[in-house]
Image 1 (cartoon, rainbow, N blue to C red):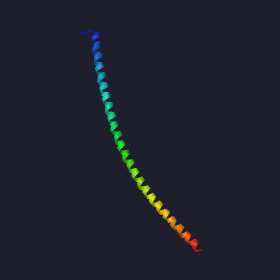
Image 2 (tube, one colour):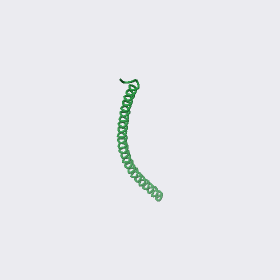
Image 3 (spheres, rainbow, N blue to C red):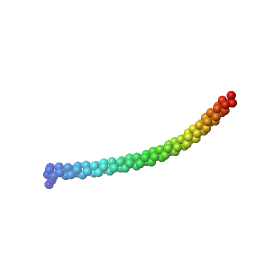
Length: 91
């Protein structure tokens, strides 16, 4: 027959088994969650890089247009200055 101490050890063994199974399941869930978070972070990095490229492209286009407009404004300013100097010379 089994004594009370033997029954206690059997119950403790089952408790240790269930606790071990629970810890394995918990570690698996944590690893799965971390894998999912890692894939999300990678996706966010790709999207941020794409957004950065788009913003830099727009910036380059605006800088080119601003340079062109600035050059045109300088040319117009020189033409106006030349016309003013001719008017002064003509007076």
